[in-house]
Length: 151
Image (tube, rainbow, N blue to C red; front, side, top):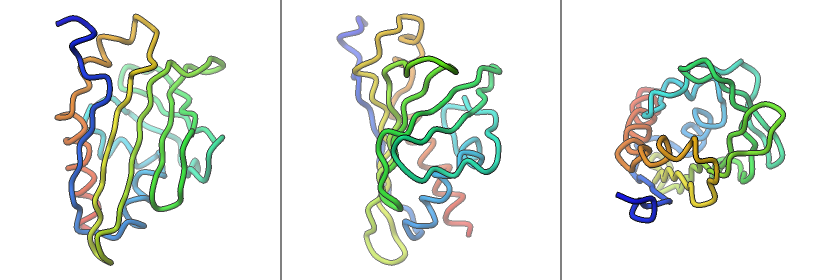
């Protein structure tokens, strides 16, 4: 397949039997993200980095030891969060991770996870971007659901 044949925006959606606020806490606290990462790419993040708004950033260590600074570009408390990864002291690579939460009722939330690499220009990252499929995103949503529904 050529790059033009790969979808550059992929997403997964699922209803989770938990309130939006509880699910959002698992996403907005980077130290919890390795617990539900379906890409098996996140190793750890320091505690105390809870995301609170656009313009913020949090760091994450990947399983390969690389450190990413994730720049928050969308934020609505309890509803939406998105970030663009970068290497320290560099501009973001051009891809975006987004989580959107829509309460269905007081105890159920529709969760949509999106990976958008339509603005990615770094050729070294294209192989990994192409490998980030809707199935990988669905794995993250399922792991998130397991955590949230256990509470």
